[in-house]
Length: 310
Ligand SMILES: [Zn+2]
Image (tube, rainbow, N blue to C red):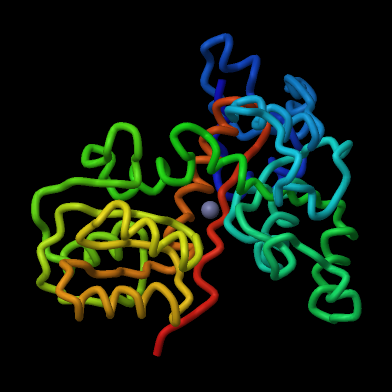
């Protein structure tokens, strides 16, 4: 069952009417030829209702090991009992994304990363901060729940984020069977790998360390911000020709790769940007929701990079 496709003009009214899907028309094999008149909408009842908690539980059920005791994947705003009117998946619940959610008539954001500018979303230190207060009030005023789905989606087997990005890059065919973020491909110049990533993941500029003409066939892909130690230990362990990652601390991984090059290793580093490296994971989440909860309107709102380049 799929939601009825409506024209752009009908979309906003459509979303505000919540859960109105053409369940009966589709099951009867009919095509809705005329715009959905408001009187007609009464015919189309929501198939099911879900609370925020139920949606979270449904996802966690798919994760090996189930619920975690110690996790950053908590509700950052809103109530678990909220009836979901529509879901937005995104990398960051930015103020711009929240405004988009309001326009869509949705009330549940599933974000991959923190809402309040630190990994655990501690807010005591922000209590008197005006930006924090503005965002918090915007969420509260519109009854929007925000759930971070980070640890859980990464714990899917295989990792939901990596799958999403690999599919977008068209690189799944090169992935190791057991460790899909290790790739083996025909020798390809670093500059060609970067060009490919820029075009598929819509990236303006990619920072790198190494020789653009270096041939790469063993690739280690670590999306997001894994941290210097994990990135460096993974390089030592996997011995890739290139590490392609989301973000780095400049004084850690970049300096390590510079030294490894000076030592004579065949290694380079390409830094895609955190959001670019994981955005496709939010699309993976969108597709999961569409499959499991076809009766709920779900939308992916890209966050885009906060940083621009001159
Ligand atoms: Zn991630």
